[in-house]
Amino acid sequence: MPYKVFWCKVNKYFLNQRLDFFHQNWNNLEDTLLLATCVVTDRAKNKRVREVKHAINQWLNVAITGCGSFSRWDLVSQSDFYSIYPELKKYSGKITLLPESPSKNWFEYRICWKSSVYTKNFLIVQNWCDNHCSFCLTVAKRWPHLSRPLEEIIQEIHEIEDQWWKEIVITWINLAARWCSNSTRYEETKFPYLLREILKQTTVPRIRISSMWPEYANDEFFDVVSDDRILPHFHYSIQSFSDNVLKDMWRHYSAKQLKNVLKKTSNLKKKHFISIWADIIVGFPWETEEDFKETLNWIEEYWITKLHAFPFSDHTQRERIPASFLPDQIEYKIKKEREDRLIAMWDKVREQFIKKNTWIEHQVLIEEKRGWKRKWRTENYIQVDIDWEYNRGEIVNYVLK
Image (cartoon, rainbow, N blue to C red):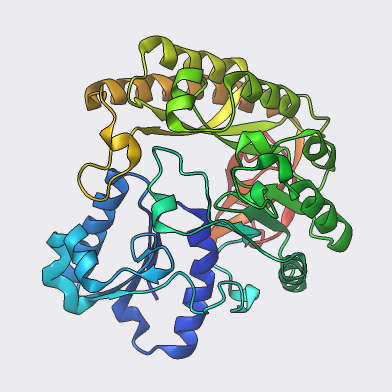
């Protein structure tokens, strides 16, 4: 069955469920495109519209899941969906809206991990969010924070291990909020306890942590992630290094707290250099050139080795967000120019980071196999493409050159 996934690791997790379910229950799979959607920006929503039109013009039906197909607990009604996407109404006979999972209990559906689409197996430990950041539409599409029981998490890791997969990616909507009474109460986090139990009760050799809010990274977190099975790759949802911007975004940390987290991350004792990734929004309303330069300078200072950088999306074309209504919206030309400067800085840091890792032996995971081409990932997430004969899922010692 053809499929396309838009960005989110939650989409990637549920994609395995959906494909497995379809192969068992649907006929004529080659005639339907499964589209796992994202609403994080207007650009993402418009790209999805183009994908739907293109698929239908190729004589395919389209099954839509992800944030584009539901609102809170329920599927979006047909009338509501086509009021948001009126240009798709004429294709309605070819479009099916689907909930996130084929099971009413999101984690009840058990798949055969042997057929997993991804070599890194994404593992949801928590879902949804209560934070209501002013730039976020996802919180309006989804529902309040929910934690997954420890027993289910451990059981699923054992199922992954039984199929000989070597890496899990612990993922989210707001993953470190697991067992907080509300995802804004970061001081209640039990995420370090979860990591300790995974280390104690499983043997999977590579544990990667997906994007997390920096305010959850407390001293207990840094103690547990010093374990070598937890890979030297940390991804923080930073958004900005400016206190003025963070306040208007309704984030729950200051620039000072953020810098403290990055220092502690950089100082962790690991076998390999630590890779730090960051989500950054540029051109948020009222962001001055000085605000932007704070972010730009700290990207270099803290060696941010990978950026998910986005120009702020005001969501004026379709569903709205609180920040849509703020005055002093920044014109796209300025947002794009700032994004380009940010990426140029990241390119410089990334190049230096890769040089530091050369002539060092890494254990690389063979993630993808296409003909003779292999896509490898080091522990700290450097991609290596080598034409060597290894199988997908193997871990191989390799000196980066």
